Amino acid sequence: MRKPLSCMSVALALVLAGCGGGNNSADTGSTGNSAPSNAPATGPSGMLNVKGSDTMVNLTQAWAETYMTQHPGAQISVTGGGSGTGIAALQNHTTDIAMASRDIKSSEKEQIEKSGGSLQDFTVARDALTVGVNPANPVKNLTFAQLSDIYTGKTTDWGQVGGQPGKIVALSREKSSGTHVFFLEHVVRMGNSKGTEEFAPTVLMLPSSQAVVDEIAKNPNAIGYYGLGYHKPEKLKAVEVAAKAGDKFVAPSEATVLDGSYPISRPLHLYTGKQPEGLALAFIEYCAGAEGQKLVVEQGFVPVSKDASAAGTAK
Amino acid sequence: MAIEAIPTIKVSRVRQHGRHFSDRFMSAFIHVNAFLVVLSVVLIFAFLIKESMPFFQKRTLQSFLFGSSWYPLEPSDTFGALPLIAGTLLTTAIAVLFALPFGVLCAVYMSELAPARIKNTLKSTVEILAGIPSVVIGFIGMTILAPLLQERLHLMTGLTALTGGVLLGFMALPTIISIAEDALHAVPQDYRRASLALGGTRLQTVWKSTVPAASRGIIAALMLGIGRAIGETMTVLMVTGNAATVPTKLLAPVADNSLFQSIRTLTATIAAEMGETAQYSLHYHSLFALGVVLFVITLIVNSIADLALNRKRHASS
Image 1 (tube, chains in turn red, cyan):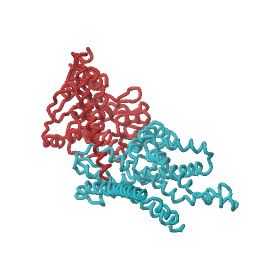
Image 2 (cartoon, each protein chain N blue to C red):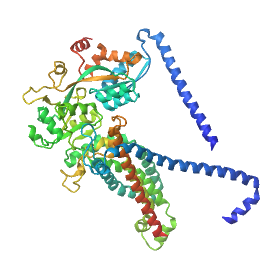
Image 3 (spheres, each protein chain N blue to C red):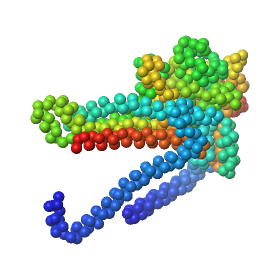
Image 4 (tube, one colour):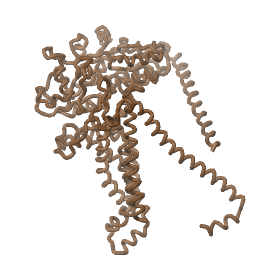
């Protein structure tokens, strides 16, 4: 018995050592190569993990791809899973940067600071939380109160909110989604932090924004919410929303987010558990910079400020 | 056996001795392996219990098992697992109703009726089916089966218990077919010959003699198929809509029937919520409690299978 076991552990150790060695040599090799060939593009090299918001995953993927083609020494991996997932990974030190489409909770922040970190927040884009229906649906606008009633199950028929009579199929994101939490707090509970409204049990919880969008495009009874970057005008119809009954109904767009008139716009964050340095810092600066903000517009989101938007489109 | 054993001892003591050592070694090795399997099961169960204990210190077992709303996030903190347990049982039941007749008929055809060439083609096709990743099945369900069901049955949405159940049945099919086929194949040829000699037709032979003789194996196939369906996660997460409602209306007309409405399973809940919970929060521990429920359900399924097998064995001996 002892013999095969010890053999196995030796083999395992060899494999592990081989992996470590391989990584090291690959690292030095790539920096060594990139330095002479494209000298201007040298930046910090190495591995960077970015994890979190599904709303932001396509945007961050676009940033990472462009950044990596410009800086061959850098390897950035981007994974989704939801804002909560990203922040949990930041707490467990399994990611360098967390993407979040909601503000970090004070309890989450405390936990990071308890373990010796210091939370850093970078707003890298803005988003209009879009409420979408099927293009065949005649409903054009909804107030927060109407949306809240739909999602808490008080309103169940499109006829009650000015549409063709027919049951409403309300779609939501899963609980790990920052979009879920943001919509719950700002729309279902109408901004009341002590509100106890919950999504009705009949609300469908879909695992990704793409799944929500696909279902709305197929289903004339459906209503759902998602980031503006997922909006496809040819397949979906964005509902105009108003925070209160007397307010003007506003459609989501870059302009209405920037002038502050769209009532459910939100910042998109990159969080780090300590002061970023090296590749992490360079990447965040890239995202917030002119080139990164141009990609924000291309991906259908809203840049951080008007200036950035102008600079982005000028380029 | 005994008669053959005597000469071997006389042939060579040395060789016998060598074989004896390797025999003992191998038997010890196999013992340890079997023991490790048992140990890992015990450890997994102990781990689940340990991680779910903090939850049961704050909530009663009764409120957990029979509570009908699942709102694990603050400030609601309501942990009623009944919709999730019912969702798992409902999709599994649909899967079995779908897969059992198909699976057994397919196994009967392959083992008893099909010519060798067709049988071999079928066998490898079934193996390929078993190898399709669940996320691919889920994807097919989302893009093809769900819209189809919605359109044909005029449902509110295609993401329903039925969609999930049918796909799970599809995924349980390879398990059921290959084990049932093995069981049928293992039925001694004499049984068939005896039945045919008594004047039974080929069909009578299959249904009255071969299938009953293989029934223990078929039950085992069914149970393993159920196990596959209960534990499956990705597919149900993608196609059942994950609304945590208790499916109570199983006999209502289509528009109201729970079969055609969205449900949420235990596995999908654990998968969807585990990533987001803060470690060691009440929500985190509640997910382990769901794991315990899942484990217990599987245990019950296996015990039922064991009971059935034993009763059958007693009856036949």
